[in-house]
Length: 272
Image 1: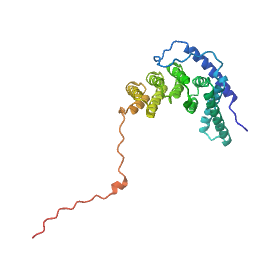
Image 2: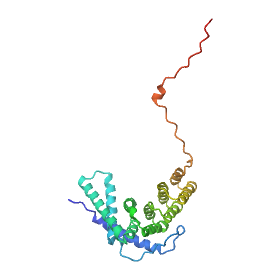
Image 3: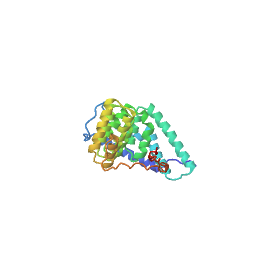
Image 4: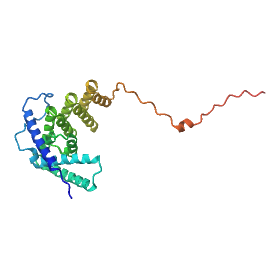
């Protein structure tokens, strides 16, 4: 017996993605109230097209997100071995098909980006992002920057951070810095902060390193959320208020058992 994806679950995902896409298109037509516009090539406005899920890349992506969610649920239990084998085989097959489409179809990356930023299952969307983002093109990067700057859903902005995490352009760095400093959602700020730290660790130009360091130090001073500010303090190397340094480790039993050498007592001079 072969286990397939739930038809009802896929139908609900398709309907939700279509509604979300139409809502986000409507919002984009309003003036942006987010951070100032970033420098770089303009991103074209979306036009009324058939839903992304009706095209091959969107269809594969939607099935993959649903499948990754099912695999995540099964990780906490012990599913039948044949079911797990089928799910893992479907995941590998769909990932390969999606990567091939992303390399050959001009519209594929845009469909994927818009779809992932509209789904409610953010963890599964991020897992899919991590599998394919190394092949991301410049147009998709521009769309992710736009979503991160002015998207109305925190989950969409979090996915946009994931898409930009491996990019090296000045525009993507500026978008991540802006999100880390100004986004209204603490989860998005935290994700952007970690993405900047990873980018610095990978190596960036001197100007980029200075900009990232300045942003981290500013977050360490002004971030309102305690957890995010603590991460910024650790990354900047500054002391964390209220944190007590751990005591020195106890001496080992072997060290304590070492005999202490006794110094010889001075002897009185022998009588002549």
